[in-house]
Amino acid sequence: MVVSAPTTTEIVAQHLAGKRVPIGSIVFRAALLMALLTSLLILVTLLTSITAGAVPTFQERGLDFITSPLSLDPATAGVWSGIVGSAGIAALVTVIAFPLGIGTAVYLEEYASRGRLTNLLRTNVRNLASVPSIVYGLLGLAIFVRVVNLIGLSGTSSGRNILAAGVTMAVLVLPIVIITTSEALRAVPQTIREAGFGVGATKWEVIRHQVIPSAAPGILTGAVLAIARAFGETAPLLVIGVATGFFAAAADATFVERVTGSYTALPVVILSWSKQNDVQFADTLAPAAIVVLLAMLLTANAAAIIIRNRFDRNQQ
Amino acid sequence: MTDLTEAMSISPSVPEPGVVARSTPRVTLADSPSKHPPETGPTGEAVFDVRNLSVRYGDNVAVAGVSMEIHKNEITALIGPSGCGKSTVLRCFNRMNDIIEIARIEGSISYHGVDLYGKSVDAVEVRRRIGMVFQKPNPFPKSIYDNVAFGPKIAGFSGDMDDVVRDALERAALWDEVKDRLKTSAYALSGGQQQRLCIARAIATNPDVLLMDEPASALDPIATLRIEDLMQDLKHDYTIVIVTHNMQQAARVSDRTAFFNIRVDDQGQRTGYLVEYAGTGTIFTNPNQQATEDYITGRFG
Image 1 (cartoon, each protein chain N blue to C red):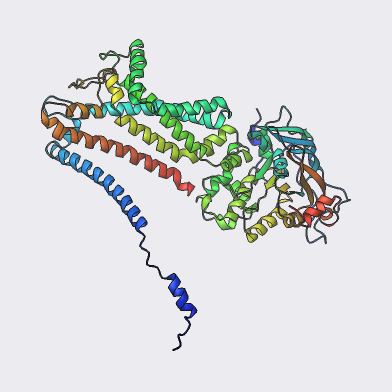
Image 2 (image 1 turned 30 degrees about the vertical axis):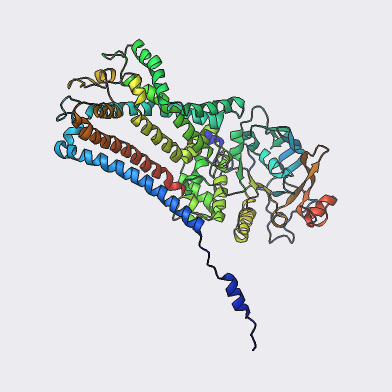
């Protein structure tokens, strides 16, 4: 009996045939999927429980909940005081932290000579970003509340007002603004700067017309992060004497009285409501306030994305 | 404070005051069997006179002892192996090395008789008259129009910017390809188009000299030929200095060629130096130095 020799095709087919079950690969993939699902589950649970609590409030009260001042009566209490306080703090952060932070970063990246001192400064800015926020609160209490008192802007609040809070928050987010702006500036290719110098631009013209516009999307991202942080921080405000009880600025309060008087902020409102004896505050009003806070943050984010896209249009 | 619009005329028909008019007799390709000017004949006036130039970056001497003249309305090629300092020398002509903190320059470069590194000379003014095109196309992340208009704008030009943009794009042989999309991003152009845009940007300020640092090294052969053709057109209006590592390119486009090489000392420090500088014909057919011949015949480099 003659056994014919296997053909080349048969030999190759034999060698290529695989029965391997990639167990490691399957396990790894499953683990990754689990991680994703767990995060999603947490997020979904959070959002549903908040929304479930918030929906009745919005159904019953509607806009009235947004525009009403704080009150002891859960049926009439609203978040307006918190919105005003948070918006005021955000405005002060925008006015103080952005120019200071962006200016610092532009100086560090574009003007300061590379050396030990510059590196030391850079490292310490990074360190500042990781300082716990409560420490900034103590700084605000020790300095800014006193300064506001000293220069006579304390109003009826003995310095525990939006001015002191805004400056404290601005200092708190300053490192974030500096770091993100620095990174955005560093990501601008050196060739863009050379091109600018090459056509006879001065250093300032190169920075103003080429480098900063190129870095703008990154700078804006940092700005949004900073605003989000300023909106959400609670601890430093508690230290520098935000009002946690129930107060309302008089309906006929002037702008100056509102700025120099007692204030509260949205996260602080949420905190104080969740601690009330009357469970209606914690069960329905606090979730509704959280929804308002999230909506404000998302609005700030959306605005930044729109502005960023306008800058980006010419860069793709 | 100088009046900017007066100090820098944008219109190509009005030569800049103080800078000699661009009317040197042309050497056209059709007229002469060799495209290189006669090497013993009268040469154009010197635009740059480099005397014993050395550049150091920190402790490292990048290039030392360079002396050469750059002539008006000619294309001068700087060739040599990587690290021989040819780009470093090029960047001295418009004080581009100023933006590198650790760069130090010794020796002198005079530009139409004025010491380029003299105390009263403003590097920004220098760069408005001596334009530069870089190795990789580096348009600004802006529209085609804004790329070209940026130089004239910051120079205080107040006339019809549309004319300036059109003229520069036409001279850079790009107008026909982009005239319908001047407001679109420069990044949408191909590499070759981007490089011609960079040339248009460089000539929009109506400079006297164009420095080109390996302008075609990132381009394909067809785009390279377009740039080379363009250089032949541009040399009637400008004095061009080009750095290239492509010897065929130097042979094709340049009137004079400077060959740089590297010297390694006992400590292993590598320093560039000028080996030989002559008409391109001489360098490629009858070089004086053995190193030049070895390099151009491909024995090293």
